Length: 201
Image 1 (cartoon, helix red, strand yellow):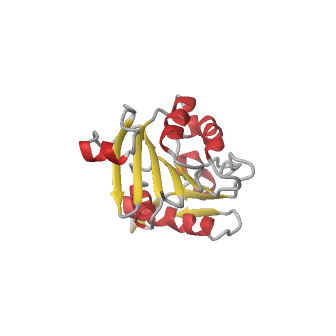
Image 2 (cartoon, rainbow, N blue to C red; image 1 turned 135 degrees about the vertical axis):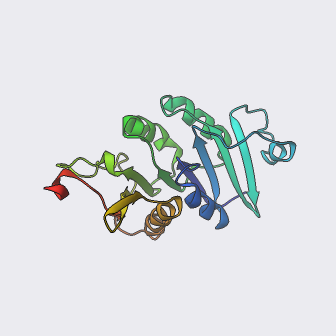
């Protein structure tokens, strides 16, 4: 059994590198995903240790003693998401990394809160569109869980711009994960530039 469990919401897209790094460090990584990566083979089902009857488990990957379990999820059904995650987690999560669209954010994060160990750190990721030009970054959604927030922007090259790459995103989020795990005070991290009305005027 893994000693540390990370729950990563949105970890099969731009946060895949972050989830992969946690797995490489020996974490059990549980990935609720709207877009599961594949279907289970016989060996993967066996790796679930008796949980292979769960049709919503779409992938199990093992790296040494570490394990990644991907479960099918729908952000618009937070309680179903919680029920599916609870079935595959051996213990409360020691870390939550979440990139959830603003329209689902509060409901999903409050629903998964009971899956977390007491005072487990949270790393919440926002794209620049979620930032209010007057109020700034949304307040952390989960009281009692120290939260590092990451705001993703863009990269400027001369007269043009581009969005962050998967690697740049993962590196920025991993820096916040390391701060969270080190017990650093909650803070906001900006990766790239963020274009808001305030910056343009």
